[in-house]
Length: 376
Image (cartoon, rainbow, N blue to C red; front, top):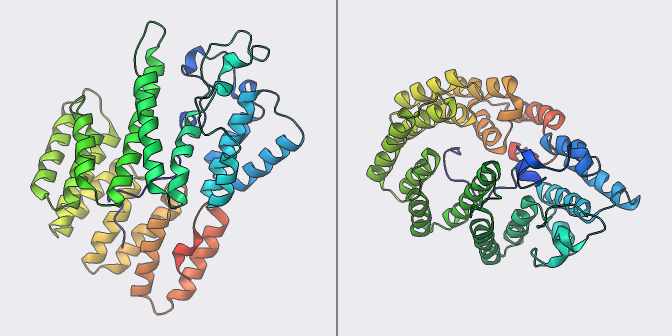
């Protein structure tokens, strides 16, 4: 059974926000383009397809745009290559993704990727790189999918230095919007690096990275991450202190944030769960779900606690209800694996029930959903 609070392996590229997918401009508020489509051919359509997980359709659109020569400027080719690469990775076509990446210079800071290298195309454009942030992230992540973990880590550390040395040094020309965007990207890369190290149980490296970040700012999400790492190597007292600090930071916040309140609630529940006090953990998860009915971590872990309490039917109802109410949020492989495991424990005819679930998943799931998690 999988607990969603456990640190995950290195994640695929995040597509929930446009800034994670394609870098329209360092400062979106001063972008020379009035819309996504004025920046790149059919970009709004491709963004929408990515958000819906329609990766095969994106591959078709990229192939069509290339074959019909619909991409007229260098940055458009890079944006379409980024979406093509992301789609191939999402569909687990890693060798094809590697071939796509090899069409680029391995040095993403080469002069050929700067706007000022093409004065005819960009006569009035601000100088700088046209390489989307997502492409830099995918360039770092791809070797990991091909078994070269060290090269992937080296590239992620290089990307981290790139962000800090080139993007987070404020100047008179750097807007606060741009700085905030790159701070979020810095956190994204740090979390990816930590996930890599966690997958190899390199706890000391994770602690060093987290403490270095927390020395600059005590961010509740980072402090929680510290607590999760401490739990992984058995320092429950340290984890408790970290979670208490998170509660203090959130309690002292000026604005009411449901996400942060649920973070505190899930941390408390996790301590109860580790201590095998499943009833108290269920109460905490219930409060999280009352505040946010789409909190999938709380939903999944409540179901696990009910299963540990030998209440299999209610645990199944919790997960089935989530899939029915919030399928976009709840439909992930971890939750489905847990539900199918519960079916196997609870029902003699679990094969038929799992087939019904698999048929429904085939209708509503994004292209990258791994249907093998139903174990049919």
